[in-house]
Each structure stands twice: as C-alpha cells, then as structure tokens.
Length: 528
Image 1 (cartoon, one colour):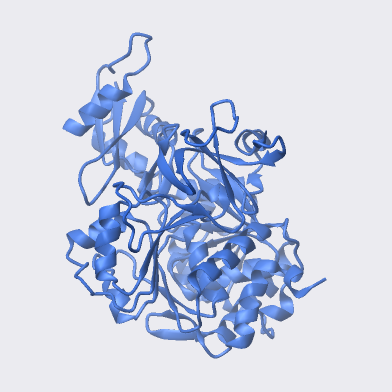
Image 2 (image 1 turned 180 degrees about the horizontal axis):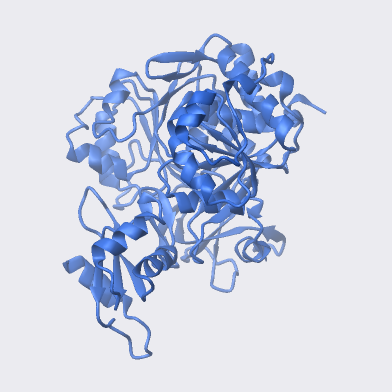
C-alpha cells in the first residue's frame, strides 16, 4: 500500500505539514497556529473519536470559524469517520433532523456553539456523544445541556504525537463527508461524497491555482456549504495560511487589505454588495492574485468591477453542484471579451466530462441546448439512504459512441460554444440564493405547516441589486397573521430559505386546468 492509499485526502495535508511544520496553517483573530500545532490538535481529536465510533460512522461538527471547527474536520477524516458539517445559523428542528437522518455518533462543538446545542439535543430520542475539546465541565454546566447526553470536555482528550500517527487507513471509495441540500419532500437530502472525489478536486484545483506556502486563503463560507471544504483543503494542501473572515461584517473586503489575502473565494452576489458599499475602488486589493467565484451565475459587469479593484488577480468563474464535489468547470474571466452578460461556466477540469442530454436522456448533437450531465471522477457516491433518488439522478446512459457512462443529471440547462459551456437556467423550479441551492417546495412545506396548515405557494422575485433574488410566500385562508407565519417559518428553515415577505390571499389565481397560476403570482410579487 502506497502512502497516497493510506488516506488519500489527508495525505495531501500531512505532506504539506511535514515540509512546513512552522508555517502558519491558520491565522484567527491575529493568532497564528502552525502546521505542527494543527497536526497535534487534530490528532488528539482523531484519537478520541476512534475510541467512540468506527470508521465509516458519522461525526458532526457544529462550530463557527474557529480553530476547533477546522481541527475537528481533520480529526474526523483522521478517524476515518464521515464528516457532517452543521451550520450554526440553522434552526433547532433542522439541526436535529440532520443529526437523526445521518445517525450521527459524535457531535463536536466549539465553545461558541455550546448554548445552541441544548435545544437541538432535546429534540433527539438518541442524541450523539458530545465532544467539547475547548470547554470545561463548568462550561458544560452553564450551557444546560440535557442530562442524558454524554459529554467529553478538554480533560478527556489524549496527548498524542500528531495526526500522522493516528490516521486510519481508508480507501478512495469510502465516504469523506455528508452534506445536506434542499429537498422537495420538505426535508433536506444528504449527498455522500467519496475520498477519491475530494482528492481529485483538491489536486486539480491546487494545480490550477499554483498555490504556494506564502499564500493566504480567505475562509468566508458557512461550514455546511461544500465551498468551505475547498477553503480548508486546497489551502492546506498548498501549505498556505487559512484566514477566516469575520461574520456579518459589511465592509468585508477591508480584510483583504488588512490581512494581505492572496486567494479569494466567494459567491458572485457578494460583488454587487461590495460595489454598492464603495469597496471596489480601482486597485484597492493589490495583494490578490487569484479570485474565485462559485455558487451562482457570475455577471460580466461584476467580474469587470472586481478585476479593476484586484488588478493583479485572475478572476475565475467556477461551476459545480454538491453532487459533483465542489466544482467541475472553470472560465477565466480576467480579461474576457465575451459579449454575453453572464460569464460562461467554461471548460471541465480534473478529468470531468460534460454531456448535453434531451428529455429522454439521449446525448444531443453539437450546437443543441439541453440538460447538462456530468461524468468523471468527482461524482458523489449518491444520496444518503435513498437508492431510488440516487438511481434517478445518477443514471447510466449511453454516450455518443454507445459506451455505458454513469452521469449526474444536474437539472441545469446549458449550451456549448466550441469547448466553452454556458449556463442557461434551471429545468425545474430550483433556485440559488446567496450560493445555496433551494427547492421552493421545501419552503412551501414549511410555510404550510407554519400557517397551521394552509395552502402555501412560494415564488421568486428580483427586488434589487443588493439582493439579486428572494422568495415571496403566498398563504391562503389561514387564521394566523403574516407576521406569525413568518416567525414560525424562521423556527423551521435556515435563514437563507426565509421568505422575505408573506402575503395572505383568499383565493389563488388558477390556470384553465385548475393548477395554480404561478406566473401571475410572480408578477404580483414583482409589483408588491
């Protein structure tokens, strides 16, 4: 067995740490933590996890942009367990549902999230063991966790050599992480991604970015967003320093200048906010050499604005669904003369192939528009404990040569211009808001429940430049007020899925066939 087979994703980080033990792996609130420290801290977590559960069991992490959150991720990988990141911004019901669905054995908490854990664990019949490596028994007592929950604190973590000494053997086909995305059934659906798929992505992206130890990578994505996994692994595989950004800071680009960030990664809609608030002055971000955007369509105007502010940087548009491991194609928009208002999604990388399909799943001839299907080494294993959905979304088709090919049917409409692909919108009613993929049917299910119950319809609206798209809810014949319904919605859904407004209606406009006229509702939402 070669070194790379031992734990292929972790090996990338271990190699970087071995060559650069004294370089900073992360700089948090002005405090630098070296790669040697990262190996020791994550090794202690991995060693403890290995005594509580088996390789392949699920390990959840609930934390903010803290040292514990980052070391817990590596600790879970080192123990051979499947990483399940949770967002501190999700409501209790959604957190408990994710933990229950994934049958999590261990839940790692950073100190800032201790107060959030109690209400989540109270909703669970079989709560996981809680690990709080940065907390004392007094901290646990103050957090008022349920009495039947087993808790390990700082004194319960062993002193071990480093992560390299405790990391267990895993094959590339084993799962690396489990992420939940919006589902049409009213519950989030889990996507299981293999170590081999993650390894392929990190190696390909490291080569594309030409990362070096002197680089400083931004980290601004929510922990439950797979783009945050890019932040950690691509940075550490390059032996560079991870720079977490402050949450909820309006003038967030000040961090680029103050911390001399060289590699930036965010969703495209953040550019419009930065421009609106006067943060994109020409030449104002000279330290940047790579600027990546993913999760939404990148507008050409926004790409040009960013380029003027980061005149030394490439501007790269990435595309990829969670089911294909973070990103699978790239378009260099640095000096693009492409006339389209939306930047293309570009060319597949890392051995990925794109195919355009007709509604029957047959590959289309060149020049035709169709559903984008993805093939290659980065496809997910499938959906967590949902073989029927996995079979439907990851079918085996025949390529144009007649050979069998496993693909992921994205539901995205696309076209091909020579070797460059363009995103043309969704085939279904899913939308992306601030980079999160949302199925309005899930929001409708929550809205109906909050109205106790009532028929609920959710439509999209384009209210203005700061928020390129939002959700508007219409509720029929409910005794609850719009304010009461919205409040109850916020107890069920994460904040990126909240409707911005809710309107009560006596009757819905309907089509001749009796179906609700969603187009009329969209028009009404735009006029409100």
